[in-house]
Figure 1: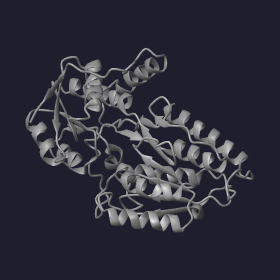
Figure 2 (figure 1 turned 45 degrees about the vertical axis):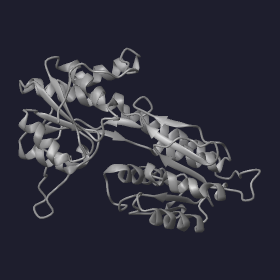
Figure 3 (figure 1 turned 90 degrees about the horizontal axis):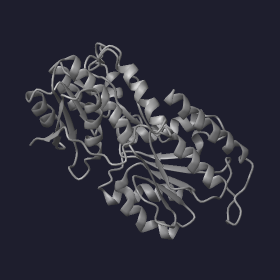
Figure 4 (figure 1 turned 180 degrees about the horizontal axis):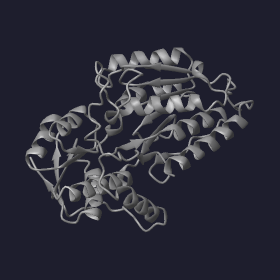
Length: 348
């Protein structure tokens, strides 16, 4: 149902964009239509990578191309494998897209923002859209998605699995203690389905070490607020379960030689982003010469959502519990405005 609603919203926006296919921008030196818009994309990995911000960006681009409303692959120029920490590489990528006369440039990493700020003033007719940034009041526009509701649902799945295994510890790996909202939302979800479970949180960028620490502490499910295949591998090797970012990708990961699925036996579900709606809205705004609205998506609007549950691994009754929680959320009965949890233990 959730994915169906998201698709319907995207299709409606696409139809609206089609209506402007023959319309021109007014008040500018160049009329922009579906036929001449040029869209630049900067990503930090190769175009075929399916994880991280690159994966979310390219998934959205491919969905836009698949909608079939007059903007084809020739409208896009993608510069791949651009390290956000390499100012020279970012400058070269931006110069490439500017020279290609792009009207709209999408930067899939917040790390590109400082370099974009340096050149945006000299390129005021270009609209720059930057992931996890804020609007600057001129021609830089941020887009982001709030994950806390989705992470709450992930916590519910983890809590039910721990209860099925008669265990009382669930693990969570967070990149930084400065951003603990997702860890707390996850812990609240665990508490909703398993009041006896404690969530052990480790703040670490070393996923392999953190995962093994949680496993040794007795955690039977591990989640995270960033993607790292080391978590999937550690959980699979230890014959426990994981449900953090990237689980959907790792659920389908196969051995190149045997074709055997590597981590499917340990994956429960995954929190996912989808920026297609924003990309459609951004393109429409440029074509229609309108100011793009501030964009902060979330579960309610479909920019974040839960992957299909792995029926082979989730606890019995998980789908039914999740469906009931979604209905409560849609009725306004489930609110996570102030995210706090009492079942969290921070470990070093």
